[in-house]
Length: 398
Image (cartoon, rainbow, N blue to C red; front, side, top):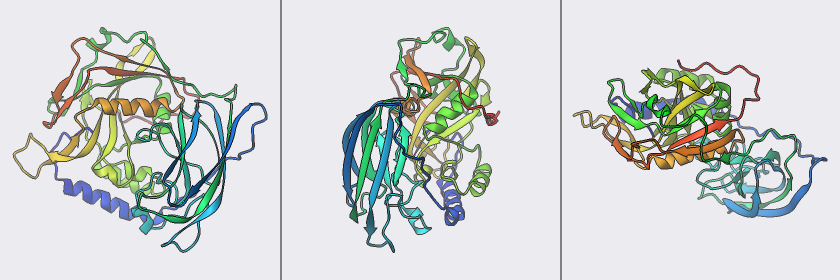
């Protein structure tokens, strides 16, 4: 996504990732915990359907379109058996051992062969664990798919039978469906005279463009990103390794690879967030930076963000050293802006979303390391619901 502002060989970064992976992999033990799936007594059942999956199927379209706030109850039975497995597995999946952690599964927090689901576009929807039983509130509108947590080359013998019940939204549900609006008060061209249009590296060289804003408290912002599956990124390599070892039971250990420090409002980012799968995070991940604006909008905290997508490595054009490597970004940065929109609006914590086209929009430019990018110039705006979590927010990096 956002390229590193300093030249570096890819080897140290890859080595750090491998060392971290080896250090924590043996102690990872993944277990599914499920809520009771007792049918609600105060809401209307909209649908009841049974579907079967065989062990050679990765994803199956259920044909069911769900809506935000609807309650989904899953109950699954049956077994699968992989040729290289010692035992059959239920819909809860197999316990992941050291060797199995080398597999990249659709949902890496669950075992191989577990029953999983997703709602919406496969390119944006966050898979979730179903297991033998699951009770959840639909976070977004979209087509429901169910699948088996396995690689595309996996094949197992056996069948899962899945009963799906869908109930109308609970009238007392705290879920909020994001509304697309034409404008949000306070978001206008006068605001963009106070916000730098691009972030920069330490030397002041301009880089990625500011392409989204968030209106909401620190706690609401943190909750939205965490609910959407984003993981907070460590500021440097040493902190990354320490966090990875100490938090070895968490998927976050893999995702918190270091993010270079870039500047806006005269300081480095307050937050870095990443959205990626384990192991692939070294070369490819969605990630973004956030700065708390030094002013508010109608009394609300404003967060200013820049999001792009790492797609590999390339030569750092600021250096004559042919071994100087930096992250390469997808030049169509509007795709990453759309990715941020789809993941956050699926959480039920965004009340309003809109786009704003500032005067003299940035439509093409180069990053601080020499890579190019292009955009239609629009800035994405989110307004968050008030935080319902009374816990104290984590301290920002500033």
